[in-house]
Amino acid sequence: MLFDFDADDAVKTWQTVNDGVMGGRSVGQFKITEDNTMQFFGTLSLENNGGFASVRTRATNLNLTEGEELILRVRGDGRRYSMNLYVPRRRVAFSYRASFETKKDEWTEIRLPLDDFVATSFGRVVKNQKLDPTEVNGLGILLGDKKAGPFKLGVEWVKVGNARGDTFKVQCEGTYQRHLQGICNDEEAIYWSFTTTLVKTDMKGKFLKKVSVANHHGDLCFHEGKLYVAVNLGKFNAPKGNADSWVYVYDAATLQELTRHETQEVFHGAGGIGYRDEQFFVVGGLPDGVAENYVYEYDSDFKFVKKHVIKSGHTHLGIQTATFAHDRWWFGCYGDPTVLLVTDPKFQMKGRYALDCSLGIVGMSGNRLLVGSGRCEKDKGCTGGGKIAFPDEQAGYKFDQKEKETQ
Image (cartoon, rainbow, N blue to C red; front, top):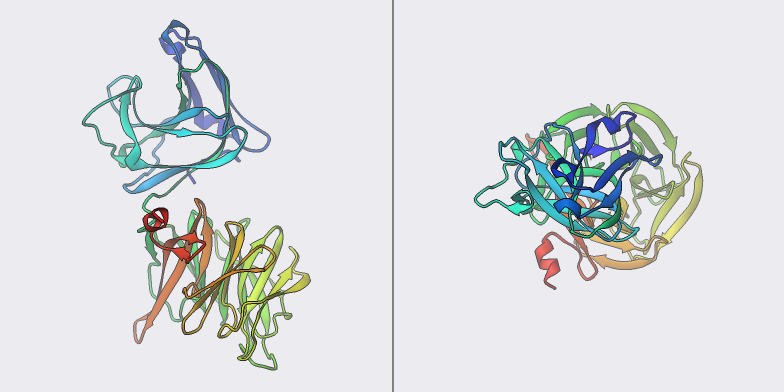
């Protein structure tokens, strides 16, 4: 996250700069709304050779690097805006600029790779100038579409992401005693469950924190600053049960354990967990011979609600990982071959694919998924990694966005 508008002093970070600095008549203002969004609004005028209004941050180091992109969530008015990136230069009115379209009265996510920003001065292209992201010390949003009249743009947040989604991989720093069981993220950090160790890294895999946990911690999910981990303290996959299923809750910032909830309805051992619409959904192991899968629904206080049946056919050892993303459920299963199950929100089958996301799968912005992977080597320990994938109706998901777009 680069900027959001939740803090009481968020307004102090921003300022307006309009064409009045050159004698124009445009009026551009901003305010922080009760919904914790920024609203940039006013009237564009073309009088006196004017024609622009902008809101921008005060000087601050954004710590941008090559290969990244800016992601904005905006509600537009159908007009074309520009994102400006500012760097220390003596040249007047100099910035790097990329434009984006908005949809009237609709919230959309805008993705602007840093490689697409072009040097400009007074709105004209400056040749032979390439953006060095490490120099950027501010950003702004500008309207200059040469159309006089009122405008209004809502901004919920501005984030930084990896623009090279088709090649983006992340490796969790360090080695651990047991193998990877699941991953989740809040797009600021990635959380890794290595069976007996919870690990927190940044989005590039740099180690931040870890904590030892009970065996067997499985897949996990993130919700409102907390990690929810499916835990089985008993046996997995036994026909007569003998599992001891729980959900452990941790503070995502510190990895400190907060509480535990029994989920004994998960009869053959809790292995994975997902969240949707104020409810938690736990999945787990199964003995051989069962030709379907089960999802156990709990409310926000972990009171049991319902057992859902997925008509999936047999999957070896049930389901290990679960996430609700991009309007559907994604379930990763062990086996040979490994299996991905995709269902609609009501657990009706949409597809079964020979794909391996049994070590973790989680939704990300921009219609993306992060798929976990890992390996263990004798006397060396276990490692984990992740790779961006893109949903695909025919294949389940694909790792190459360019391949997907050409079909």
